[in-house]
Amino acid sequence: MNNAIKAPEAFWTKARMSAIATSLIGGFLALASGAAAAGDLKQDDFVGISFWIISMTLVAATVFFFLERDRVSPKWKTSLSVSGLVTLVAAVHYFYMRDVWVNTGSTPTVFRYIDWMITVPLLMIEFFLILSAITKVPTGVFWRLMVGTLVMLVGGYLGEAGYMQVLPAFIIGMAGWAFIIYEIYLGQAGKINADKAPAAVQSAFNAMRLIVVFGWSVYPIGYFFGYLTGAGPEQSANALNVIYNLADLLNKVAFGLIIWAVAVGQSESDKTAKA
Image (tube, rainbow, N blue to C red; front, side):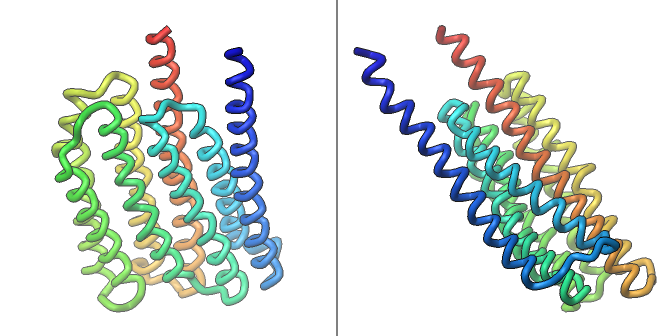
């Protein structure tokens, strides 16, 4: 009797997972076909190739995170959903950014910052969510991370879009980044992690912090090579886009994989403890 009752539920879960994967892949393929029709990718266009590599990696990561959501306990589902949303939003923007680059040879600044204005706050929310899964976290942690993120992104955009001199804008962006690092290491978020998180969560939190410090350091490096070296426009654009693309590949996919690893590990531990 129990098997008969559980069978429809199991079937529905598999059907739902299959439908999600099919819908996501179909949507991404439609975007890819539209982008391919708009321009031809030359084999010596290494910047354009880097756009395609990260686009398809983000597609694969999105499907993976959403499918793995059904594998973890309820308290981790939101974290995996947010990881999937980060890679989903980024993948859509990367298809369009690739199109801009291939057809015009110019840096898709607006598309890139629209992407970051959505995905970077979501990445910061992950710090809040991973702590919320194990204890009650004050909302002040959330808002401080959001303020630091907005200062960092607005400063960068004002410089790259020409609304402000690049060096002062660079300094503003770096100040926002420094504030985020302070909060996750020495601020309330860091203290909650040190005092209340189990070993597995602390390990994941620490790995996420390292990505924010070392992985995100690639972005100011890209900004520097793109705007502050005095190099020619073509050379600067190439360096800027390749560095930004590699940084997004590391920071968005690796960030989600860290959360996935701790979510699966903690979910398996919970099942073992209950058994």
